[in-house]
Amino acid sequence: MSFSVHLLSVAMSLCGAEKMVDEVLLLRRNAEELLRQGQPAKALVLLQKAREADSLQADIDHMMNVCRAKLGGWVVPGAGADWNEAEESYLASVKRNPDSMYLVARKLAETENIPGALKVLRALTNGRSPKSEHLKAYADVKARQDALVSFHRQLAEGAVARGALSEALEERRVAFALKPDDPVLRTEIGYAEQAMAISLAAFAAGIRQVLARNDAGGAIALVAKARVAHPDDPGFRKTEDSLLAARRSFVAERLSAIDGLFGAGRFQEAAEAMESVGAAFPEDPGIAQAREALHDRILRRRKKDALDSLSVAFDAALAQGDVQGAQSVVERMKAQGAIGEELARFGSKIDSVRARERRAALFADAFGAARKALARGDTAAARGWTVKALAIQPDNAVAKALSGTLAPSRRPPVAPAKPAAVPVSGRLSKEGVAKVNALVMAGISAYRGGDYPAAMAKWKDALALDPGCVQASRYLENVERKQARLR
Image 1 (cartoon, rainbow, N blue to C red):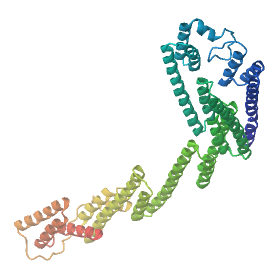
Image 2 (cartoon, rainbow, N blue to C red):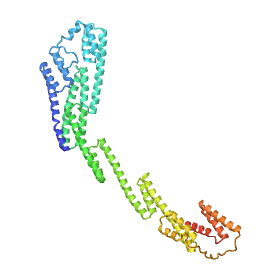
Image 3 (cartoon, rainbow, N blue to C red):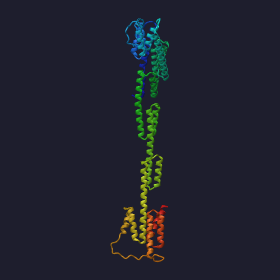
Image 4 (cartoon, rainbow, N blue to C red):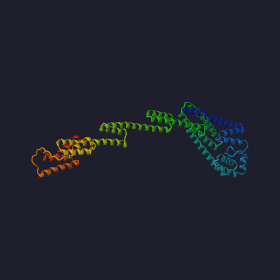
């Protein structure tokens, strides 16, 4: 059954509650009229029917006791509708045994039966010479009666201000039960009962109209007000339960559909559908929470999609060797809110590429030095540089081939060609050779310590003493080449 059809069926069920209330009010009014006409027996029959229809009407019990009293039986003050024992007049009991009736009055007062206590005490104090304790007890109970009546009337007015008409009527009935001979209180009860009847009819009609418009949210709000005014009305209670159950089912279906839109990536449609549900039930805290949760899910999903797109751009930049471009993509990821492990993975990739580039540069330097040494005819130096190049890139085919070419031959050694003369200012002494070697080693030590300027200075000093020093020349050329590349 659709939600709108369900609302219409709920509206039709409200008619029964109105009919029951109208019947009870009609019976009660007819009974009051019969009492005024002096026909308590007929009034009692109508009141019994009214009580069977609505057992919560406390004033009906009181009216039934009034009828029994008029029919000749003494009814215990405050007795319920099941009282049917006929006793002699309490006035005769007061005359015969006043002390015993005084004890009855005290017990009645202790049990909060204020009207009964006052009735007995009034009879005890109406004699020619009433006892002082009887007078004092009457004054005390009368003061209690006035205070309690005022208290319950204030509660009734507060309930009316909150729209709790049923609660207000009950408070007025309590006040009237405390002072049943007060015509003002009786009149207030009559007005309260009329307000109840009017309110019941107005709420029922209003709910039917709202339901006819398929305004579920408006119907639930109106029923909630009706439940405040008439909390014990079974029709409103049933209507509220049915509407809430239907709403829960309806909302669950809509939220499921919204979840499907989100899963399909249709974020805007999901958000609009959620706003529509929220507008239909603006007071539902569960829907407000669902709306906030959807908003957060959409933000997280959009962030993920953006990061996934940037990740593709990052991989493409690295594949092209564009480290700067990849680093720029990482900065955009930070702007999108990426943190922690999300960034660490991309940083590791960049570091890996940079390390690979550094190894490639070192390989190029070593292999280049090997080729230059080979061009000078310095096979030993070329072999040494080739070994260093292969240590950096063991699988490099070109370096492997060169290493094989430079491997020592097993043929008988041939006397090396006489080296070309190196122009020197003069033959070095042993002390000069030692000094050159010391400068070369000092330069190597400085180089390993990271002090490149000092290393270059030592090698230049060595070349100044011995321009033909191959080691100093090679080291100096290597460092100058690296610095030029860094610049």
